[in-house]
Length: 147
Image 1 (cartoon, rainbow, N blue to C red):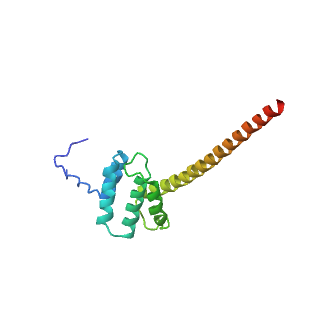
Image 2 (tube, one colour; image 1 turned 120 degrees about the horizontal axis):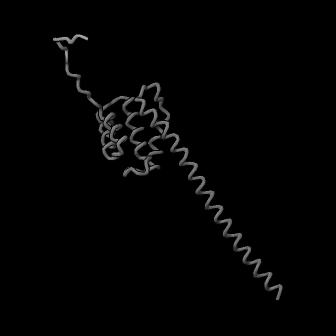
């Protein structure tokens, strides 16, 4: 192929990432504190129902991650209970936010299951303790009756 002498080599425009995008990148790199800061900045600087939902979901998501310094599943559940009622698809939120929303729904459902299992386990342990005490009393009565 012949080489062109004239080159229209315009520099590609620098990509201007929003704080939301920066937060996603930090989150992907496991930098939870940076991610939280970016999401909070995005929440403060942008004012629209879409931005509020995106930031709120992202912040709740970081709060549901056990390795995050912001881990607080109770607070995440509380804030997400309001956010999940909003229609993310209708507000055309970022695709990553929609994934986070679904992940939060799954995490909260799993947390509910864990809480139920813990309650059931505590009840089973109490039942087992009572049965062991009853067996011990029965053994004692049997030994006394045999004497």
